[in-house]
Image (tube, rainbow, N blue to C red; front, side, top):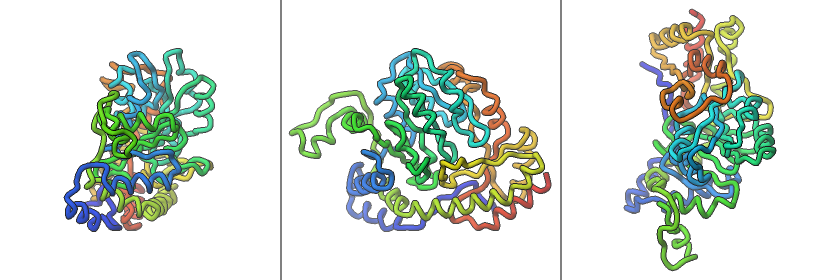
Length: 374
């Protein structure tokens, strides 16, 4: 039997809510399940307004529109991130400025941000890798000093915090993902968090194809029309129904994942002590959500050997991002704002271990036993 890298945990009312949607035959977006998701996310995070999207990528695309990125405008991002972070900028004609990451968290290295700022810089986009927060106080202070906007890619961060504040609520805007690989899932799905109230009305318009339809449904206007640029970012009620059941179980899912993460961390400490791989560090200011348990091996060859050993025992382990600055599109659309030694090492050496909320702890013991063979 093969242990997958990830597997959705269905532990609540998913089937009940899906049956309700299908029985009601109201499948289009922004129905009662979407509204319930909005209310629950707002309650849990304290954000000014949550808006469900069809994906985390969609939420990032909305951020690109809301920032009114113009050709040549620059946004600082870590090179070690998913391509959607960069696409949200490049699709508007902007320039993603790639900066290296920290070795301990694999997050944007805040000490390199200021040197990457130019007169063309509009925003900084920290990405909270594996549900561990970036050093947000420093990033926010740099942004304030240079009159820049901070927008968070918190795709992996639902339920995690920085100094007690939920990830996704520290910048003006933020994107969440509820993809099937995340802790809380909707198959596909995401959310835009609007923390600066100045963006709320326009965010609703952008999400509704550039129309003021949301105001119409609230009875604030007598008809709706096309008023701005936008697109269709709404998920269906089927997606929202599944997501609501997951959001109701989010704390339990995250607690279970963190417990498994901690078990991994103890079991794989000898590997780090032998100098074969580096484990993550969770800074004191951060409460993570157990999204990923990763190791960075000392070489690509050692990572390949570790993965082969695990696969041979039916244990699925996965590499992750290739740094964007070295990609064909990264070279075409972006620029490099620092050296990239840490990110390039992570791209060559990182391996993610199997981790999902209903996984049995004996999987971790098996992984540790296999890796002792290195």
